[in-house]
Image 1 (cartoon, rainbow, N blue to C red):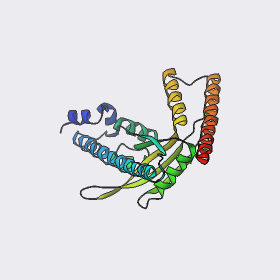
Image 2 (image 1 turned 180 degrees about the vertical axis):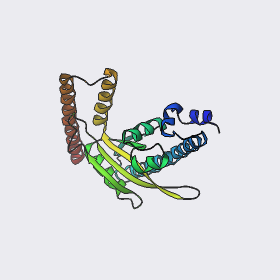
Image 3 (image 1 turned 90 degrees about the vertical axis):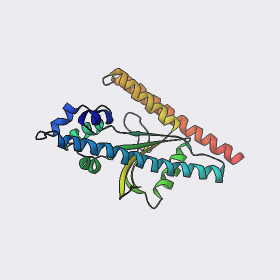
Image 4 (image 1 turned 90 degrees about the horizontal axis):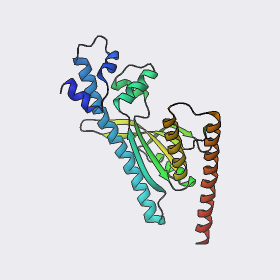
Length: 232
């Protein structure tokens, strides 16, 4: 595999930009390091599959036991080498697989969309209770929303991935939120992206008001669900 092949395989990372980290490289070192990133993709893709399978099994068990699915749907994403490069540069770390594994917790990401707020904590508790899952970090932006109104539960976990010659413990970021929280977060991100700059204070206040209104609706929908469940 030559440099051109590797460049195509790693989702268009600009070789000239990456070379900044290899001032003494004659070519071979760069090729070797980029090939390691292709292997890294496989490792983190495997970790995503492991976590999604765990979640799908839990959701299926709930359907069997309680005739109810706490998970509405699951999404995933994997950082490209170009994104990894950018984050390592911001952290003032060298561009290498070893630095990526040690310093980045969000190379692999799984987003779990739940029906109700209580489902978020149920799913999180069941996931981290598994004996091969280690909770590394937890940020609860539901009980303590971000200033802009963003709400979600963020977990960083470690899960084992069994390879042909070894077992690796891999970091996966798991975001768990309701349909309503996801609706706001997705549109807020899109609006800011289209603006191509920071939004005005007035628009920021309006977005925050929307977040608070949606959160109140979220809580009301959960209360309605609980009331109907008690009646039934």
